[in-house]
Length: 274
Ligand SMILES: [Zn+2]
Image (tube, rainbow, N blue to C red):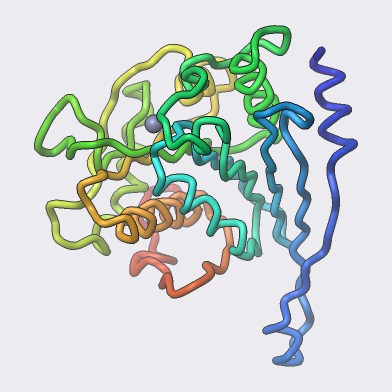
């Protein structure tokens, strides 16, 4: 499919719904609407997957999040599933909770191929290249200020330098101050200290974070949790880092479930921020 045809298909499947806050309505305050747009990527193929664009009433920064780039990195896509229920009050969340559904269905890292290593994809190529191209098109056209993909590793980077667990991993040294600022927001709330996140710079050509910064000049990183931790802890850590990303960008949001805001929320940690 050409780029134009892809975008027409995206627009055709988009559905707009306004979600009113019942809590605010009950408190007799002016109701604020969150605009939620949904659509399908790769509709009509075995890779078909849903995406959400959630915009707060107040315009603001834009965050792109994709889970399930690898099918056996469970905490990433389960965290992304939960994000669907969060309310965005300022800025926009562009969310692809389960990017690679064929791999997720089999619980395999990469089936039938490692889509995560094929960016920016090829809209005329095989299924995996087309899936990468569809995600890339949404990533590019939704104009995010930050791109985050959700991954997992079998080991702690802190213990084994070849592993990725409990890191923000990205491709370019230039992003280190930005990524460290995000971790400074989340790490105080993570115990024990051993499980706190570290930055890891490891360039991978053709992975989405590399290509996003290379071609779109959008800062991009992967959240990597460690599979040695309990699943619920990993999901929580993924969501806590995402809160730190939203706080750093200056987005407004209301987490769902029993997740408290970070203790650093509202704090001015980065010089010039805000
Ligand atoms: Zn991965």
